[in-house]
Length: 66
Image (cartoon, rainbow, N blue to C red):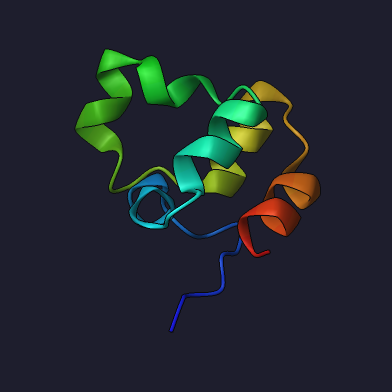
């Protein structure tokens, strides 16, 4: 059973999924290569990240929940 990913889901939870990293890279989520993000990856929510970097949250959520 997989979890439903929402804007409150952390990057750590997303990266546990089979295609999580692939989808985040597709949309250019910069946190994956940021050394500081690795310290906070269990607290960073996808909604916060999308707001900070002006990324298309709804499209990302749709892809992650496929």
